[in-house]
Amino acid sequence: MRTHKNRFTVLGLLALGALVGLMAYTQQAKPLDPFEEAMRQRQMYLETFGILPGELFAEEGKELFFRKGPSGKTLEECDFGKGKGVLEGVYAILPKYFLDSRRVEDLESRVYTCMQTVQGFKPAEIERDEVKAITTYIASFSSKAKIQVAPKHPAELAMYNLGRELWYTRAGARDMSCAVCHDQYAGQRVRLSPVRSPKQGLGNEWPAYRFEEDKLYTMEDRINFCYESIAIPKPEFYSDVHIALTLYMLAEAAKAGHSFEELPFFTR
Amino acid sequence: MKRLAVMVAGLVLLGLGLSQVSPFRARLEAVLHQGGHEFAQVMLSQDKGQALCSQYRDKLPADLIPGFLAEQKALIKYPQSGKLLGDWKNGEKVFTDPKRGNCYACHAGVASEVAHGTMGPPLTDYGQRGTLEAVVRYTYEKIYNAWAYVPCSLMYRGGVHGLFTPEETADLVAFLLDPNSPINRR
Image (cartoon, rainbow over all chains, first blue to last red; front, side, top):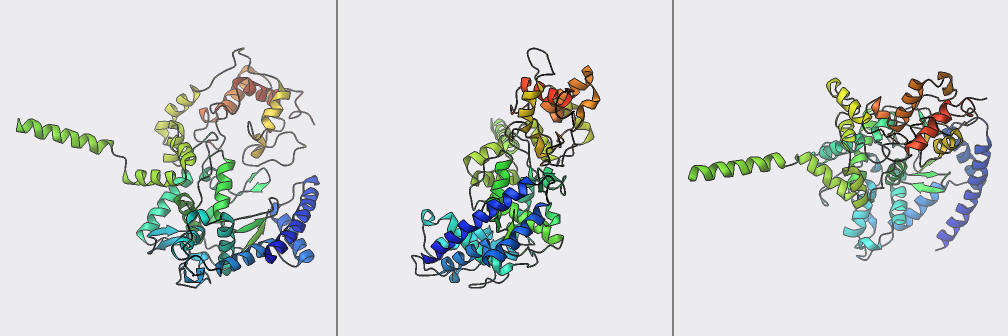
C-alpha cells in the first residue's frame, strides 16, 4: 500500500509538471518536433524527480509479478517464451505460439493467461491495470533489444496473414485502415503527430508513458487508441485482433532490423 | 429415379460448396468477433467501395476504375436549394470540428493555424482558383465524396457517411472559395 501512495504522490507532481510543460508547448508559435519535446520533458522529470513515471509502473509490476495467486504460485512459474522464470529478452520474441494454451499470444495476453492457468485467478478478478504493470515490468527486460519477431509455426504464419488483412481493412465512417496512413503516408503528420510505418519501426516504443495523457500505454492500448481515432469501436483486450496486428507490425519492423526503444519508453 | 436422386444430391453439394466462405475469410471473421460485438459489427459492415479498396490494397485494377468512380459519383447528394456555395463562417466550424470535417488532421488551412497535418495538400489560398461553376462543383463533389475522383484515397467520404450534410458541404466549399474567408486572407 505504501508504494501505491508514493506512486500517486509522485504521479501527481509529474502531472503538474506535464501540464506546465504542455502549456509552454502549446503556446509556441511554431510547432515543435513532438519527439524532441518528449525528450526534453523526460530530461526535466529525471532532473526534478530522479525517476521516470514508466519506472514506477514497472516497480508496481514487479510486486505483482512476485505476488502469490489463489494457487499459491507467482508468475515465476509462467513460461513467457524462453522457459519458466526467464524474462530477459522475452518481449522481443513475442507474439509467439504457446503449446500449453495452443494459442499465439502477445505479452499482455500471456500475462492474462498465466494469471488464470498458473495462478488460479478468475478472469473477473484480473484488473487491466495489473496486467499493464506486469507487462511493463517484463518488457523492461527487453529495453533496447533487437526485435526478433519472425513467424515460423503454422499458427504464427496464419496470425501474421490475419494481421496483414486487418492492416488493410478499410471500415467505419472514416473509411480508414491502418495501411492508408501508416504505409502510404508514413513520414507525414496527422495534426502534429508524426506517423511511422512498420518498416520505420512502428510499435517499437510501447509500453510507454505518454506525458500528454499522463497514462501508461501498452501496445494493446495504443492499437485501441488508433481504432477509436478512426471511428471504429475499440476491440476487447487480449483478442486475436491485437495479437495479429502486433505480430504483423513487429515482424515487419524486425525484417527492417529495428530495435525496441528504452522500455518503458517516454513519449508524448 | 436413382439418377434423379444422384443429380439432386450433386446439385445440393455444389450449392453448399459455392455458398461457403473461404477458410481464411471464416478465420478472419472469427478474429473480428473476438474483438467484441461493436468492433465486429463495424468491421463486418464494409460497403462495396471499402471492400474493394481493402481487397486491392488501395490500388484498384484499371478495368475496375470507371465503374467504381461512377458508383461513387451516384452517392453524392446536393442541397435542396441547389446552391453549392454556402456560408463560409459555418463552413469554418465544420472544417475545424474533429467530429465533422476534421480537415486540419491532414490539411493546412488558415495560415495562422500551425497545428495541421501534412498528409493532404495545403488548402491555404484555395480561393485563388476563382468561383467558376466547374470549380465550385468539383470542390463540392470532392469534399462530399473524395472517392468519386480518387478511388480509395486517404481522404474519406464525409458526405456519404453523414459526417456533414449537403448544406454543410456547401458551407465548406464557401470556406475554401469565398474571398472573405480567412483561408484566402492574410
